[in-house]
Image (tube, rainbow, N blue to C red; front, top):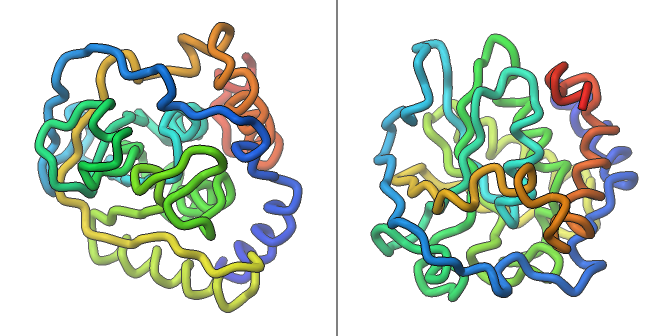
Length: 236
């Protein structure tokens, strides 16, 4: 499976351009609205959305969570993708604080998924193909440690899979620059303020960032991963 993954990521990434750098837009600009303080999900706890013990959890940071949430929510086997913050030192951070780059937190997505439908390996494939993991603390014009590429593993198995893929990607030359994705243990997850959840679905027609950055990126994802999308998402 690793060989097939590396082969596909080399070919698909060429046709999956990172569009964030094309537009002089930043998701943090003018978006720090007043909202309730988020409540944390602590280390190794299952998110409240999990009702089936067969479900598993993945936590990824790969740029603006408005983009990543929209992508992962369309995958078959994904029960939920919640935007939030992790990896830092500030308790109960607000969006404004995270955008200031002083909390140590990254914008992230916590994914609840059914491993009998979609594997962690497949989630990793989507993760690496839908952002640029070679730019340190940056995705396009979104700059800062809050936009770093990172995998926060929930088990030793997840840690090993992520490390193996990263190693093979660097050795294969899938990108011209080294993959700098951070691989760290999951500690605590703070769900983002309510107005960030399903952001693209709610604001896609009105927000320029959604129209010029997220929409083209989502369209590329839908072409590359057409066979992995939920039927209801594919029908829309």
